[in-house]
Length: 387
Picture 1: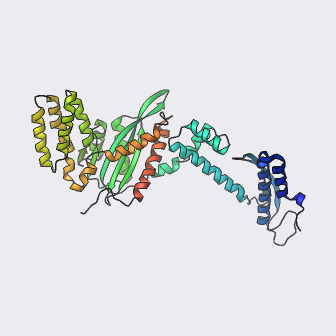
Picture 2: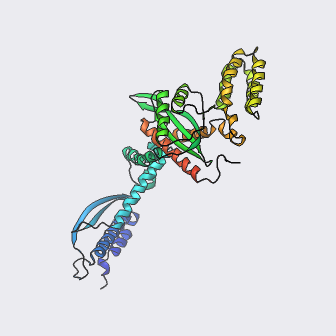
């Protein structure tokens, strides 16, 4: 039998809209949602309310009040119950999935470098609901399980490893301190680049680096034939302890920057930089050593400190000559990690100050994980073996 118009929930919803306009939308949706859930329960039980049926598989057991936050505002729903307690409306479940998706979107906004206050304002304007700072923090924390799994994943053979660090401001014990963000990249035997891991800590430099490098080995990193990094003392000590005997290439870009500290006058900086570039651009190590000798002779009188420094430091940038010529340009600097640090900086500069190390690590990990996935799906290899 057709349901009388005045008893039809759709009719009730239409009346609410006619009488209240847009102000009645939330009430109309509430009526329709409640009706849809009752219809779902009837389908689950195999019988409508109060209907006698041989196909009935259970019995209704009243309703439970539940308020759902939506873009229309809070909806006071009556969720149908069953005696077996096995039924739950799919329409509500879909709403909960949307709510979870919203929370993850908030977390993603946080990862993209949007500050907590701005996230709160965006959500209030777009979704018409109030989101607390605690909810934003919890939403971001939902990423931790995924990010930890990425940071702790098993590694394999990587012949080239590039290491570098940057610093972020972190609050601890009422003080604002510099936290070291360590990043390691690798080039595998297939020529593809990958981000091996990252770490954030306020501990002493050598202790932090040693723990980080040891973790990489514990996760299965092996086959390292060449390491590129700057000459940071803590990193140098940790590298020798964890990867003894592995050839080390000091970043040529940092070497050229360091030379500026030993140039006695501004007018000499350009020619000195050009001379150092010509040394590093030599076709082989023999030619580089010859040019270095000329460099030392040229500046022995006018810049003795520069000459002494160059004679000791510049050969640390010659290790790359042992690699195939097609690999040298990629492996003579830490530019691979420097570009990652620029991307990290772009995301973190909005936050400016992290409340703790875990918060900083979360954001850095998310940024690097995203880039790592892009690298792994790229068709082009970073270097080519077997030419």
